[in-house]
Every structure is written in structure tokens, then in C-alpha cells.
Image (tube, rainbow, N blue to C red; front, side, top):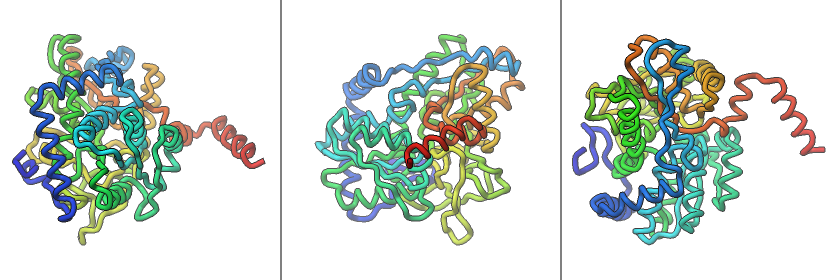
Length: 408
């Protein structure tokens, strides 16, 4: 990365003049914290006493025997407080907010996990909190909306555009422009204007640092490959950072939706539907048409249907340092179901994308090799979507009876 926040031409900070001073303050505070050894120790202390770190690296023996190839390990970010990797980033940013002396935080969320994590952080540190969420995601992630509101956050449904994550980010930036003196925007992924991609990666790197140490203890050697789902890119960058300097293949798995040929997907790094552009304050691959207009996205997983992707991941793709694949909705449901039955582990729909590709490739690797799958979140948040996908008649009957009871 250069001093302007570019990663081999991707990234940067394309800002309205009114936000320049706010970003300068944020970058200055982040630099001071990063150069202060006491800050990382404070961060690790918070994460270990409040958020269950280090999260375990679980050997998936049943899945390993089922596929007959590489030994499969799962990095259990679902056991992090609030049920996903999102706590790593928000608690770190919360410490920065304290340093800046601000009293209010805002955030965007798609799957809702970042929203719950931000609301949790705000409750712990005593900040006012507003969460922007696309109207579509509010409906499909109602349990997370419920908990955000119980935690004291205001959830603001966004009705503009496609009413999903992209539109929630736009609305959060509008809020920040109007309230920047007392407000910090807790951006949830490794995207956006500099220094957000670097900053979010820094806090999420705790995943990869732990996983590297844990696999060496378990296996005595590095894994052959590590797998992570890719929406904006925070959990992928968190895992990949631990292995960037090692001879380990980094595999990111995007949302293939209903198939890349259908145009109903969210694959930026492994489809022909994306092109390099500038939007939402940074330069990367975006799903856009020939006129530069952003296209609609689709994924069964609310957290993966973002129109852009981390500029750091874009640079890794261009440099050939990471490989990117896509998993369809149907493949994701199948992989999730298999993981539940074989290991008693319930991955989020987002995380299940990584499981799809790992399951395809594990059999082709030696039994002496190992792989790591990052389970970035837990699946209970997806109960409505998953139950619909499984077409469970008893669930459908339950919903009908509940609805009748509420309106009796």
C-alpha cells in the first residue's frame, strides 16, 4: 500500500471536501494507535475477556473422512461474541472512537451481523447508535433487527435503490456528512475510502494470526489452502493476512447466486460482469454495465450481495496471490446441510460459500495435507431463509399459525 491508500492501483479516497478533515482525523488516530504497542494489547485484552478470543480451530473429522482427502479444519468465528467475525472490527473501532472523543456511531449492515456487533459495541462503550439497513435485508434478517433494537440502536430501513447493502452504505455516508463532528462511521468491511480497508484488515488480522499458530500446533506444518467467503472482504482479509507470506493458496468464494450466466449473482472477481470503477469513495471491481451504472446483485446470503469488493482483494487477484471462485445458492444450501449433519456445526449462509469450494477441492488433495475454512458466522440468524430453502412443511405450518395468532 502507498501513502494514499492504493493497493497496486486499487483503493484510494475519493471524498467530498466536507469529509476530508474527518478522514484525516481518523487516519491520524489510527496511525497513532497502530504505532502504540499498548493499543494492540488493550485490543487483545478486550477481545479475550469480552469476545471469547482466541476462537478455536476445529478439526472436522467426519467431513474429512467423508471426502477422503485433505484434513479439514474450521476456524470458528461463529463462536466470537455476537456470532460472527464482525466483533473483531467493531470493538477495535470502538477503541478508536474513545480516543477521538466521539459519542455517536453509525453503521451499515446487510446480513445484520455487523449491525448487531456495532449495537453491542455501542452499548458497552456508551455510544448513541444508528444502523442503516436496506428494506429488503430488514425483512430477511428480522431476528438481527430485533436484537439491534433491544441493544438500544435505532434501525433505519433504507428504501432507496435496490434496498440492500449498497444503498445502506450510501445512506450511512449521508448521515456522516451531516453529523461528522460527533459521529464515527463504523464501516463494516474492508472497502470504502482509505484508511478503512487497511484499518478493518488490521483488526480482522487476528483471525489469521490465530489460525496460523493453531494449525502449526495441530499439524506441525502450514495448510495447503485456506478458504473464506467474499462479500466486501473483511473475513477473507482477516484469514488471508495470516498466510500472505507463506506458500499457502488463498481461495476466496463469492456469491454465484443463480449462476454466473444468469446475471443474478454478486461475483466481482470471477465473473465477466464486473469492471474497474470508482464508487462509494474508492476504486475497485464493481458489478456495472457498459455505461458504468451499478447492476443489481443477488445472493441467498444477505451479507454477500454487495456490488463492490475490497481493493486489497482486487490487488491480490491482479497479482495472482489469491484465487477466486463462485458458489451458487443451491450449492450453498447443500454444503450447509452436509456440515450440519456431519459435524453438528451450523455455518451462516455467507460462510457456507467457502465450504462449497473447500468440499469440491478437498478430495483432490493428499491426506497428508490440511485446509482451513473460515466459518465467519453462525447460521441461526438465517433461520427464515434456510427454512424456506429447505422447504420444510412443519416450518411453513409454524409460520402460518404464528401469523394467524398475531392477527386473531
